[in-house]
Structure formats: C-alpha cells, structure tokens
Image 1 (cartoon, rainbow, N blue to C red):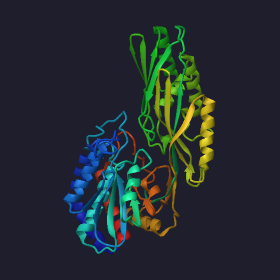
Image 2 (cartoon, helix red, strand yellow; image 1 turned 45 degrees about the horizontal axis):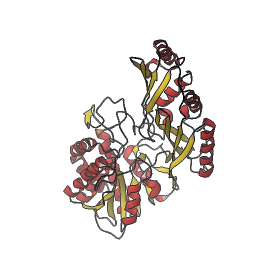
Image 3 (cartoon, rainbow, N blue to C red; image 1 turned 180 degrees about the horizontal axis):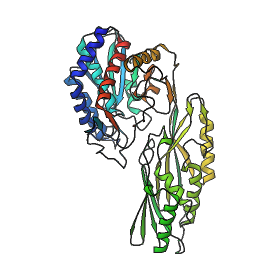
Image 4 (cartoon, rainbow, N blue to C red; image 1 turned 60 degrees about the vertical axis):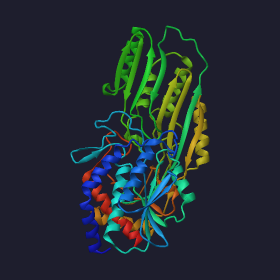
Length: 473
C-alpha cells in the first residue's frame, strides 16, 4: 500500500471524525433488541429502525444500497467481477440492569461513547462504513467491488438474516472481514449450543413450618451473564429474618438487597454482566441466588430439592465441569453460561449457552447434557446449534490482516486467536473476524456501560480502510 493512499484515507477519515461520533450516538439511541415480527420488520421494530438508519446513511453518501426484504442489506461501490466485503449487525442484546449511563442515550463522557452497541456492533458498523467511504472518496483504483453487508439478527446466534441474504444475493464476496471479534485476527470460533432445562412440578401443599419460595426471575438472553436476579419468599417475620441472615452469611453484602412488604420478602442478588463467551469474568446473579438457596429449606419441597441439585450442576459452572461436559483443545476450553432463569409457581425454566472447542464431539456433548439434566431431575432440550468456525492461522488473508494491524498499532506480540464469540464468519466463506477488541484489554461486549473511545473509533476506521483496500486492489 502506498504512503500516499494511506495519507489520503487518514485525511478523509479525520475530516469525518466528528460526524462518525455523532452518527454512532444517533444509532445507539435506537433500541434495536430483537422483537416480535411486524410488517416489513422480520425481527422486530427496533432492528428494522437501525437497519433503515444504516441504509439511509449509505444512500446519502452516494452508495448503491440493496435491500433484501429487510432481512439484510448491502451498501456497495465500485466495479469488478468479484467483490470484497465487510459485514456488521444492527441488533443488540438487551441492556440488563446496573448501568451508570443511559444504555440508549448515546452519551459522551471522558472521551468515551456509552451505550448498548457502542462496540457490538454499531461502533464497528460506523468505523467500517466510513472506511468504505474513505476508499470511495479517495478514488484509489480497485479491482474488486466493495460490499458492506448489514445484518439485522446476530445476537440470537443462528443468523437467519444472513442465511436469507446468501440465498438471494447474486454475487457473494470472495473474501471479507467481520469487525465483531479480536485483533490481530481470529482463526477459530467455538461451536455454540443453546439448551434449556425445564420442569413442571406437581402441586404440593405448603405448611407454615417453612417459608415458601414463590418465584425467581433473572436474565433475558442466553449469551449474557445475568446481572440481577429476584426471588420472592412468603413466610413469618422470623422466617424472613432467617433468610436475610443466611444471605448475609453466604454472599458478599454488596451483592444482596432485601425488601419486605407484609409477609413477603423480595430478595435481590446483584451480579456483573459479561459476554457468554467469557462467563468466568462476570458474576452471575442467579448463581449467587442458587448458592444461597442451597443453604435454605423451603416449600415447595420438590422445588427445593431440584434447586439444590441445580446449584451443583449449573450454579457456578462456567466450564461445564458441574455438568460433566468440560473439554479443551487448542481453541480453548468449553464455557457454559446460565443466561435466563424463571421459576413461577409450578414451572421452572433455565436457558443456557455453551461454547465448545472445535474438536469436541457434539453428539456426545448433547448426550452428556441430557444425562446431567436427568441427574438434576429436569428435562433438557437443545434449541440452537451453530457449528464452529476455523481457518488456517497461516493463511495469506489472515497474515495480511495481521500485518495491517501490526503496522497501525505497533503491537508485534499479539497473535491470531481462537475464542468463544459467535460472529457471521462461521457461515461466510473466507471472511475473517478482525477486531475491534485488543488483546489484554477488558472486553466490553454485552456488559453494563458498554463503550468505545472516540479515538478508538477513528483508529478502527483507519485500520478497516487499509484492510478493505488490501482485499480489493
């Protein structure tokens, strides 16, 4: 790449820096969480509104925009028999509890842009979009067309929007990047399973000698560590006091909150959100609750016994050892995340997410999960399967991307990684996960106070401009 081309890209992007910041803030303010299907909105009103924002921005900047029935879109420029691509998604995970900043406020503080999607993946969309714009406005000669692909459903894990796109697009890119991962590049993503534990309990007569557990609620997405959980108990003053005492003795005082109303006790446990691919760095609020419940005896007794068993099998089991499914290879260890938990009356439901190494036998894994469920007295159903992604870390495209990253950052130590994230790369041939996260920094995907610095946003755009140019020239 010539020094003059690089200088032109950088000059154009620096001129757009404030506009990039402003548009990312606007995009964050769209709550694009998956919702019920509506007319012309297959994944809900929020993702459709964010998708419309992206396509409108593309048209305003003079790109050719192609809409695939609101499932996905292309923002294109250039000519060529082949195309190089970049792909981003407009949907976000639910915000959860515990934010300092409005999760949909698009606020700027101390040089950072805060909000759900600031990194995953709206910040990446903005960085990639302006990278494409820099190439377009620079007038550099390209042999391949550039396609910026926009998805509307990524966070649920199966990617129906991009599957639809692949069925209807006339010309797929021959190579591309996925800004939804780690630098300097990712050569593998673990396979993903969503599975559910459930049980319906027979009605049981509850006496007054023990408190009654009425409900537990926590979490809203399979791929997020649960940040807050709530349990409602009913009992005498003495029984409620004993539960609060046990909570204070079992859990850190800053992780619990108790509210009493009449003969009801609302007990809250406070965790720390994290991405399901790294559940060990979060604190699961339902796991805290299960740890407490294991210390208590309560009605209904059949519920009590089942929750005690689940405390052992899925409580703090972030590596699958409690379920008997732990495994590791060069792509890392299996991870297990409890993302949703509901107990209402006679009905129990738990939604969990496993990221498994690329060489693990999936049939055996599912059989082991069924056996673990049986030991805990619940029913298991696998509800989503997403096979792993793997590419040779020595491939020419990976090495090209690594070289670009090294030249832009001076980081010569970081190497291509394998991880548990689940990007669009796993269903697109010759697309490589490429940033935005830098090794050694705390990952803010799916966390409270998700943010990206204004300077990092510009740096990402400069890196992506060089990557796209390398693939298309």
